[in-house]
Image (tube, rainbow, N blue to C red; front, side):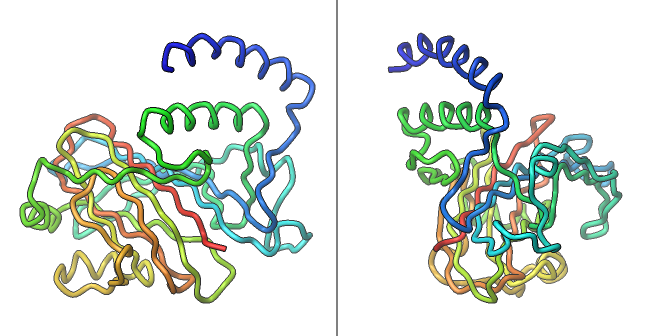
Length: 270
């Protein structure tokens, strides 16, 4: 199957180029009132970190029910200009538990801009996703509804992981929702041979500081599926969460690669 896929890729690529030349403006459309919000966050650790000068990249995709998707509401921007533009925020020096890092966000819209893949990007995403699906790295055939097979981190035990995370790095990933209470499917994967993550659905970004200030008593949703400890890949569902909620992802301060990439997929349940 792998060899066959390689044979058809040049044909598909030619078809994409020709089609995009005539129909590049076409936008893939999800089901009613669902939008895709995509952005990435780049973290450069400073000398206070054991892992300095290594870097972390959070690649985030959120599919959510947006009631303003097909309206002219001023809160919500849409249109080709918004969908195709590339924006970088300025570098920002931040502090976490007394240690500094530089953060740079790419295309972060605070759930106000609509991102949808133009035709050729959708085809590329679909082919890549289908290949992962065929070889078992992906359990869902939809390229924007991600479901990973769960893989725990065998490099450390859970108790060892918890000890290392006390001085680790954490990132808050907000959800998008127009509802006061909602439910989300989510999937996370991390590269690195011996690196695992903990993840918690927390009520607000304030719990990030609470986690580092009082490791044992921060607040998070404790239902099954709302948290996971010491995984390399994980998919879960968390129900009845507030619109200010988000994922708190924590990794040890023991990065080996120059860039550690963490892929996050969030899907608001209909």
